[in-house]
Structures are given as structure tokens and as C-alpha cells.
Amino acid sequence: MAVAEDPIVATSTSMRASCRRTFPGSTTRIVPGLTAASVGAAAAWAVHWAVPAVPALTAVMVLGVAAAHLPVVRDGMRGVARPGLSVASKRLMRLAVVLLGANLSLRELREVGLPTLVMVVGVVAVTFIGTWWLGHRIGLHGDQPLLIASGYAICGASAIGAVSAATGSDEDDAAASLAVVTLCGTLAIAVLPLLQHPLGLDDLQFGRWVGASVHDVGQVVATASTAGPLAVGDAIVVKMMRILLLAPLVAVVTLSLRRRRVLYANRYVPDSAGNGLHGKRPALVPVFVIGFVAMVGLRSTGWLSEGVLVGMEMAQQILLSTALFGLGTAVHLPTLTRTGGRAAVLGLSAWIVVAGVSYAGVLVTT
Picture 1: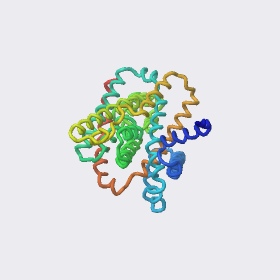
Picture 2: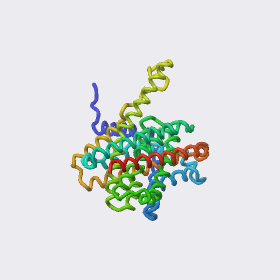
Picture 3: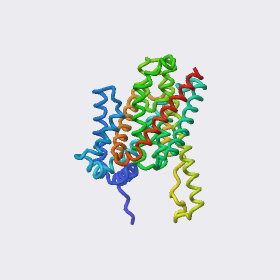
Picture 4: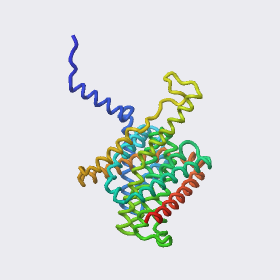
């Protein structure tokens, strides 16, 4: 006679299984790394609050890289803390991308107008294709050209995290790409305000230029604030337009990867699962990108209160900072120095491309 399962035991078992799916491996194994990432993120924000000129995302990357190389802690970062740091850089990054959608409202985007939307799409397309092409031409290995192109075209760290998660990119490639994009985005805070008047831009034009050319939202606000609230408002809206293109970009990249794997599968003998040379096909639109789009829709309904939105933005920043510390610890400087020169050339070239194309677009549409 079968014995009915205790519902409390069944619920507990189900919760443990769900936790294992979300955070693979023993929770004991990931606690040290998640703790280290949380402490690193908190330290970075403390640096930012003490010295506002230092962006928090820049500080957290520097601290992550330092932790991976300081003799006192590097063994722990590469050993006992590695599982948790990997969870932070991948899983928490995906959650941060989902919450990023809460910053977007379709009503605000419609107010800017179709010409500006067309301009933003053009800037994203030219920046992505041009950076990706140049990265391959100068010999960057792995997925670095793709990830750097994504970061410059859309929204820096969040875009790199989304694309690397969708394509299964190597953690070293993601970390190196993030370092380049974060550095150049930070330089924009100092350089772009100096160019406003020499380029003949009024405050509104400057704000739209910043929104169309600077990577991270925080960097956009910091850069545009030098020209006043009007510039900040337009900069944020244009930046939100770029972020809205994150989902289509991930879908296009994933579809391209799927077609490439089908080509290889036609050339090589499939494995026992029938997957071809490169294994399982990636989903056309990853679940976390669907979550991002759903969050945009939820924000657009107007159902979320201001307090909820503020809380979600804080949670997104905390998750992103923690994920970036995890990625920072994956940077291996001896390896990075071998391609660092080429990555720097690509970063500066992409910076010129996105700034030049967006400047021309702003002049045409305003």
C-alpha cells in the first residue's frame, strides 16, 4: 500500500530542487564567492559615495581585478570562491538585465518621436556592425569582438552580460570586454562635456548626443548633468531607446549562432543526441531576455508605484555591481596583456565611431 507523501517534505524537496536549478552546485560551495562579490560591491559603492567622481561600476571592476591578483586573496578567488563568483557573474547578471526593463516606459519613448528613434536604431546598427568587423580585422580572439560591439552599441555591462549569457561566451572574454567598455565609458564623463561648445551643441542636442553615445546609464547621467536638467532628461530617454534594442540584438545574435551551428552540423557527423559538432542549440530568445521585455511592458502599464520602481532600480544596481565584481575576478592580467593592445585600439576606435555617428544623427534630427 502506497504511503502519501508529507506535503511539507514535498514542498521542501521542491524548493531545494528549484534552488539547485537557479544556483547549480551545492549552496555551501557558492556561499564564499557570493559573499566575496557582495563585499566587493559594497566596497565599490562606498568608494563612489566617498569620491563621487569615481563611478561605482568602474570601482567594482577595479576591485574585482585587484582581488584576483593580490597575493593575500587571489588563491581564494581562484579556488574556494570561484563557484560563487561564477554564479554572481552569470546568474545575477541575468537578473540585473531583467530588472533593467523596469527603467523603460513605452510612453516616454513615444514622446521623443520617430526621427530620433530611427537615429538611435542607425547608431546601434552602425556601431555594432563596425565594431564587430574591426575587432575581427585586428585579430581579437574568441567572442571579444562580439561582446565589445554589444557593449558599445547598447548599454555597456548589461549588454555584454546578456549577449555572453545567450551565446555561452567564455568568462575570460566577457571580463576582458567589460574592462575595455567600462574604461572608455568612464573616460566619456570627462571628455564629452569639453566638446559640447566646440561642436556647437545646445543643451538638448548635447543630452541626446550623450544618450546615443555613452554606454552605461549612470555614465549617461553623470555626463549629461554638466549641461543641466534638460540635457539629463533627453539623455535618459534616448539611452532608454538604445536599451530597448537589447532584446532584438540578442535574438539576432542567437539566430546567427544557431545558423552557424547548423552549418557545422551539416559538415560534421552529429553526436549521439543529434546535435552536431557544437552541441545543444541556444534558445532564439533566452528566458531572461523575455523577462526583460515583460518588465518593460509592466512598467508601461503604470501599475508600479514610484516606491516600487525606486526599489527595483536599487536592486538592479546591487545585482549588477555584484555580478561585475565576479566578472572582474575572472580577468587574468598576464593573458589580457597579450591582447590588451588590440582590445584598446578596438575600444578607442569604437568610441570614435559611436560618438561620430550619434553626433551626425543628432544634428539631422534636431
